[in-house]
Image (cartoon, rainbow over all chains, first blue to last red; front, side, top):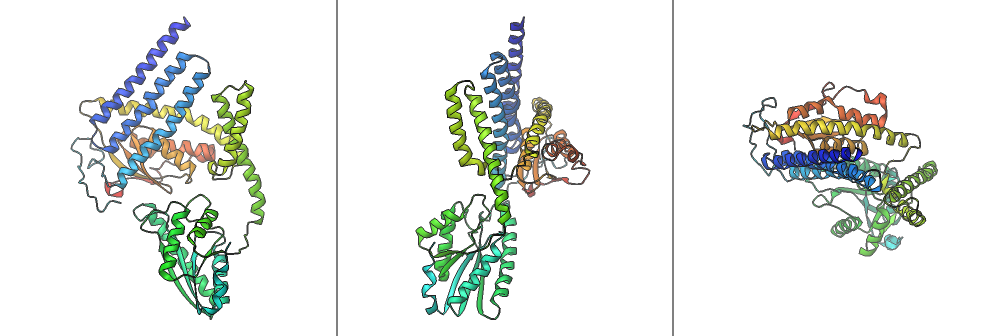
Length: 122
Length: 355
């Protein structure tokens, strides 16, 4: 009984992990610029890796490897935003302008395609 | 310490001193000493006050550093005028190292040397607490580098007002060592086997080395014996809340990405957060970035520049849930109950030119 439950818990968690990793991949391909892509890239690390590691923890049961997977998740959660911020900040500093919608409440696709102007952006 | 540079000073009519400044408790005394010692040996003194800029001019923080530098230079100039009285003192002020990124003591020594060569400097007077915009202690390695380059320098004999602070500093140091030791020992034992004597022994040795070498780097702000453990507990309460926010935001962003029309609404907003710069701000910026849909592009002082992908994520940001969480972790429950950034008018949507 417990084994079946454990098995299906692992399957569901892995499925969710794969799903969010897939969504993130789709997002990286579909989204228009580096800032928007950085958002979705962090999904892989948060929920994608999160569910996968939760599946690992459930599969191992209560032993030392479980502690390792929790620690892994902890470090992923610290390093992921740091890396995302570093990418976004360096993009901003090299003068990559984000694509922004003209009217923030208007969610059309005809985004205000900001022209890149390198000289004046710090 | 080499102080031979001004032995022959009596023969020289003009003594040229270079005084690198940084905003420390002893900078006033350093300037005073520079003027006094310069006038002992020579009839007239040329006092070069310089501030070395740690960042190059392209970095956004450099604006703030430049303002601070100007401020410090003008104060120092008036100190020199005050100390010089009727003596013949010429004051030159400059900010140097603006064109490059100063990384280590060698870079500082080299720009001082270049400046000294350009202006015929006889001697450098260094503030013992000299610390130009970087966190690590610079004085000893800087002196070593100056020695290597062959620039004559002298450490100003100042009286540190922190006599009592030194005593407090000892317990602070102990707290840091203690905390670092037990954190690294605990981590070692989690990875190893806490019941095996070999791991216990090697773990203690490793944790000892880590504590001695890294305690000052790990905790830049003094620890509080009561507050710091409480913060750890509060952080443990905050983590489930953060996870819940991450899951909600993930679902919202996933829904937007998978919709064929992909109704994204990217915008940039500026939020003035009410958390202290340093660890709390880092925690807040990281929490914001960790939540899909919001991405911290820039964090300067308490001002965050956040890129948001969908309107919901921006609304959540303006409602300040994560900010309250961080305030709860660092300042307690009472402090968490503050108006949201929207209510206190600290959040606004800005254009791309704000980057």
